[in-house]
Length: 172
Image (cartoon, rainbow, N blue to C red):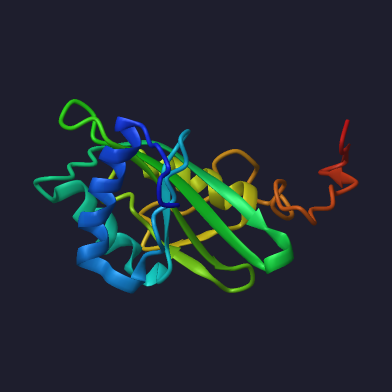
């Protein structure tokens, strides 16, 4: 953050929470971005995502006990897929952070955090179904919105809609 920048109390609280995470995980996480709408950082070593998530949930000064959302992202020009998780310390501290995690578009995977926040179970299945993001260790890894035999992942930027599905014209 630029010197002399005025930041809100909410962003200051998020920055303080991030400092604890940065102290524990060092270069495995990016610098803090004090975005006024949703402060965030990126997990640079995706293999540590589950460890970071557990730390964020369990640390006495963090208590990120609520995953408000997990969204998939297609970084098509960069050949990466990713997720953005909005996390909050609900009813404990009130701070919130978004965490971004990415993996290679072809053959990459992100460790599941459904064992950390149960709501991640369905969100990760949706990110798989729409973007084709693989979550290693997920307990019920299957499509959630499209039929099991649907071709492709509809929210990828290069997705081509199939012409028909079981004799039904697509789009109908």
